[in-house]
Length: 149
Length: 109
Image (cartoon, rainbow over all chains, first blue to last red):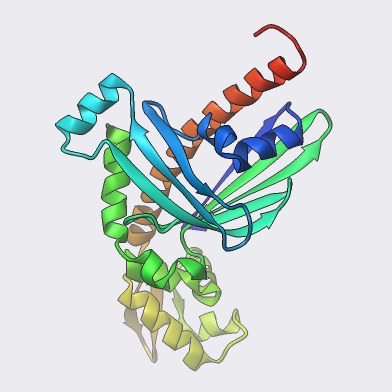
């Protein structure tokens, strides 16, 4: 159905390590930034209702050049809130950051020799309506810009 | 886009869109597939129509509804961009997991 995306991955790594990389500032910072960006975690209160905020910053010289040329800021802050926390099993958060809004959930299952992950991006959850859903048009354009950069 | 999103939040309306994927339907026929009164179906259809998700035409005694795929396509295009961002991110995660797993087991990188 529309309004939703599901991504599945599996890794041959211990579940405890996977969870650590999702739920500790050091762990998250080591992979969260897309190419050309680094991420600095500001708050990471991994419990329901807890804050999850970070700053995404262009660091790669080529990326900085492109952002400047496009008149875009070199960094932006994201302020999300955890909505579900089940240790080593499931994590979900809503991110009404700036003009972008999304419900993201990730679930881990321990399998023989590794971990299976299912990530769901859902823009049609009830919690995303109202204030969080405002400015969708802006977010569309911004995302497209980001990826074209 | 907000209006499309608001329309899609309701599971019943999503169900109506799902049925309309199979082709156009008169209201009465839609109501047969749903555990709600025809008046309720009409109300949902009005909201879907306002969001540009369905259109209707006159067909004898009643209106016949069909799907307008464009807003859904726009929504999915947007989400597709977001998915690409995540694929990129998860590639990083995969590399980091491999790096740390090697380190933990004492193998050289």
